Image (spheres, rainbow, N blue to C red):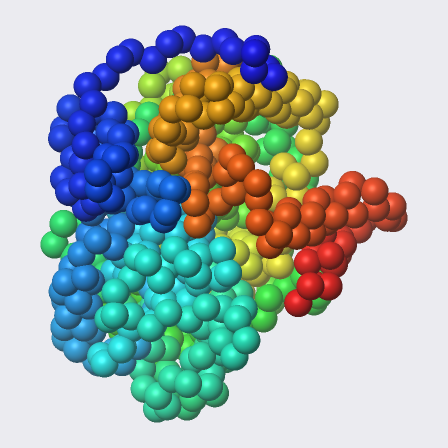
Length: 551
């Protein structure tokens, strides 16, 4: 008998077929198994998956899956990357002032970690599909910077058109340090101003100056301009998040934010200072092609700097999608693994404006709900016009993680950049209903995971049946989906075997040591005693202490 009770519906019997490595899989649902006479490896394919890349290492089998349209993006086509680089280099040369280095971040215009395929520009250009990393394209080279989570994955997915920088390894530099010390001097750097945060813009400007170079913000994103088949951005419906889950009405949240605005008098330590060259006035004095925005504003007239006394705080601009969803008690599905929707939100002492795609489906309950809240709606792209020309009666507050384009469009002193967003602080303190919701959610997810462990033990150890990485992940999703209130995964199931993970069997000494060090870190955090106000960053050293001892 297994250690845990088995509660799941039996899987329908599917046709069986053997598929060779890198061979196109059939479009019908199939289960494939390893051939005893060859190195052909087992696959499990469902509708919409389409193909699988087989990885074999001794007795361990691994499978990477993707859709036919994403095959190049997952790194299976070396020529695809070279062609993409040729295309973007042509666009770089064709700029009014040719760009020597173009910086391609992972984030979208809301500084999201997870992005839609339409915003996965770094993935498109490099074939690297990890969630974090940065690419820099020059006319004779291309550079990908990733942290230790992605050293192995990136090396497998990129081709020899790219130089991989394993950030954190001895002798490797971060991308900003690489610009400071290894980029060609006296050149022009370009980046989309929507895709970098305010604090990153300041750091980038300083790095570029050290090479006696300049920084520009092209009107159009150069990856988009070089890409013939950019996917359509998701525009899924928005729905209400019930008070029984939030524990606080949106009206109360907006009142708390407005109370903070009225009381706010930023201290110097809270403010992010911008170099003159990074203000709208400084940029426009040098170039008319300054802003990486989706609307045509490259020919705007320079605005005289307002030297009047600094106005009183009047409102806040929210660009982080999770902050907007939290504030309005609304949810969506525009970004994978995140219940959010593309939008910007401006809250002032007089009004609340939601900038959302005019074609987005706001069902009747949502429209009535927003009307009752006093939230007006404007088109998503009209934010930029509002920031430039809107009737803003005082100073707008943004945070250091806001897209730099927002700061560029607001003439000083009509804005102030703070180190942290007030909404991030407010939503970080959970109310009793939210805390109870977390507990119930983890109990449900724990039950699903225990069911999956029981199934895995029964299948592998008792029945001696092979289980692929993809099949194991799908089974875990099946158990989670069966639980109450399931809305989707927080991230893709991380399922691996062989060289990619520990699996059934006796672990190696290295695996035992690594597991022990991580466990020691968890115990150190769990048993720590610390004063009120201590931050997670300050406690982080306890989690890593055991790991550092082995270095």
